[in-house]
Length: 83
Image (cartoon, rainbow, N blue to C red; front, side, top):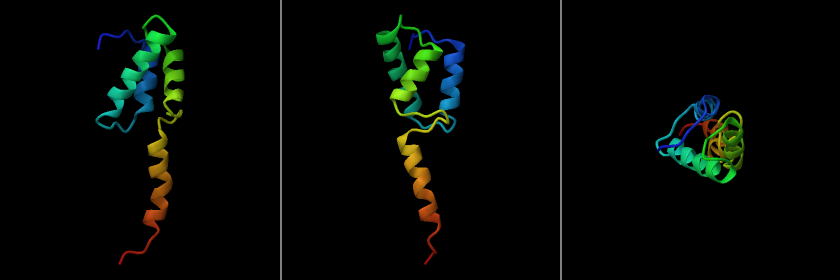
């Protein structure tokens, strides 16, 4: 992709996806690129990255809705006795 991205915005993306999955980082980067085109001049700034990740449901810890669902389900799964 030939999208300009500020260093601060790139650092935020790195922090937002600490546990990288195969498709998610590329999907998020494409979405941020689209937000940069709509909201600004095509450059992904820290402000656009923050707003875009919020709109995509990614919190400050880098977790999206599915991550939060997995983490809240895990205690219930591991608390069961094994057969």
